Amino acid sequence: MTLRKFQMLVNGAWIDAASGKTYESINPATGRVWSVLPDADEADADHAVRAADAAFRGPAWRGLTATTRGKLLRRLGDLIAEHASELAELETQDNGKLIRETRGQLAYLPEFFHYSAGLADKLEGSTLPIDKADMFAFTVPEPLGVVAAIIPWNSPLYLTAIKLAPALAAGNTLVIKPSEHASASILRFAALVAEAGFPAGVVNVVTGLGPSAGAALTKHPLVRRIAFTGGPSTARHVIKASAENFAKLSLELGGKSANIVFDDADLESAVNGAVAGIYAASGQSCVAGSRLLVQDGIYERFVAALTARMARIRIGDPLDPNSDMGPMATEQQLGIVESMVGRAREEGADVLAGGQRPAGHEGWYYEPTLLACTSEKLDVVQNEVFGPVAAIMRFNDDAEALALANGTEYALAAGIWTRDIGRAHRFARDIHAGIVWVNTYRAVSAMAPIGGFGASGYGREGGIHAVLDYTELKTVWVNLSEQPMGDPFVMR
Ligand code: NAD
Image (tube, rainbow, N blue to C red; front, side, top):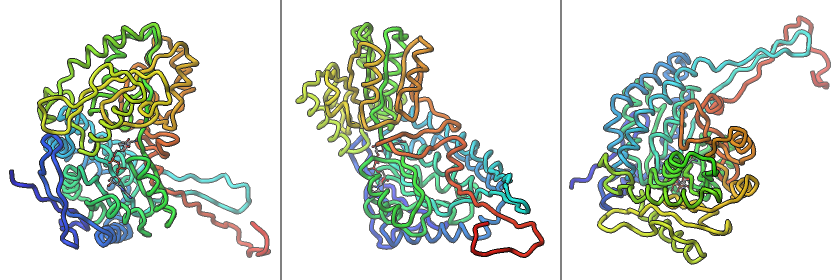
């Protein structure tokens, strides 16, 4: 097979790394190299940030009205819709995500651009009812400058869109650093950004490794805002880098989300919700419902129905629309899944289903796995696997369910399965999580914020807040008095 060779986009030009270095990307479904990309370093990151900074200050972007920015975003959304199937195939080839899932995400992706497009010219300041005679004061939301968007491998285009659309709507410019494991779809997308009519330098992409290209970007003095999605240990490096230059930061990290099934739940829905939560995307989802908490009265029936449903999950080529589960995106991730399941076994977890690589597949596949756990202290109950592995625990009453649900340092998402509306609202109120789904799971919308608390990060993406988060308010004071200013040594 001929390898595909990609270049990166800086200041409107497709270029190699200045050093000429490249790295190889592997197709997870085959375990074989399929593409070669520029291995950017500090010099390339500097080049891209300077281009984005110049674009931010230059008239071609700065001189556009907010309405025109919105029109460009709308055109970009339309171009994504036109190229959805090509983008989906590219992404699936690169990160092994199911084509059904990437097609689904791509079909919805234009909404993020259309939503932000509509907001671009609605970012209003306000006049302030100042309690001082002869003073007029107002606020203006202003863009921040260069945004460094650091993207993981699991949903490259979706996680780029949710950053880029609001950042551009607010008038910022960007340098995107895709994951070294999944850059191809973002590079193709970058070509559409240019086609939509955004001026050169407004959106740049540098490909390369995290500790070199990623670190160089996040510590660059001209970067004013960092939007990071990835793991908590990388996030600690990013926080330290942001401290150097006081860059504003949002962190979308992982989770150990509880999917809670009460005795009165609709069994079929709850089983589908459990599968959607942890086996869709092979569990490589930040919001994965990786802890199943099931009430005593329904536990046996739920386990029987879930394991029967799991047995029907078709593992296979992610490009095959009939497959339900594809591979892990990286060999390293497969190793993490195997070692965490091994450790869970040693710590006393009972393997109810799965627990190994499936036979007959050459890529990085792992079976959908269900582990019965009797102690919440188990590593697999506390820590993110980022693979198709659910820890299932039983509980007796609401208080026990809530204590278990809130019992990890993560707080990203939670699912509640009950027909009792009062209980649903009590749990939605009391659960420590940034997103709560009642009788559904993994629902997303351009209008709905996502993000977590604690080890799941801070800041929100999606919704109006996200656009505002790419601005800072300027307050303007105007002295209307015709009198000369008085005593300079007292505050006005
Ligand atoms: P990761 O943290 O290894 O990498 C994320 C990105 O950071 C990559 O582009 C990587 O190159 C870059 N990076 C690595 N080291 C860096 C450094 N020192 N400085 C700057 N950038 C650096 O994460 P991953 O393995 O790609 O993705 C999986 C993780 O992402 C999981 O923990 C998952 O839960 C999390 N995630 C969270 C969300 C969310 O919205 N909350 C969504 C998807 C993934």
